Image (cartoon, rainbow, N blue to C red):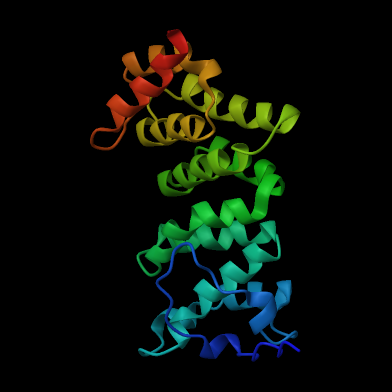
Length: 211
């Protein structure tokens, strides 16, 4: 008979630098803590960032990962708030896996963030990245909505270099070569800002659609 995993309060979980191997929070958190409103309240408590070294500064990370595992799209905004600050760089690193955990339910909120040019460049760039993750396994109308949102971002906002660059990378992550000709044209127009060596990778990927 398999023993039940030991329950560990979230304030005692402590340090965790893993990006991909998240804990099974449903199994290890006490039932009263594996709760959407409880976890969101923890994310709203900025005092954890000022806590001395120990397990408490890691509470927000465990809270957003647990919310991701339960499929709560309400986690998106607080994680983007953390990503916009210098306090929790893990929020930026975790956003890809968090989006994967949320799946297609994240499409609408991510599109709204991407389209809102009053939002920070970080938030909109992460929204584009998240859409690429969510769109990868999507099919039919859901996939087309993601493709349209990413392409419209580049078409309509020529000066949003980094956001546009991530939108192109997201389309590449989805394997969406159908838009290759237009992406290459917009790249030639200087609409995309990409990291070191990424411009060549994007050009090669979308160029294959022209072969």
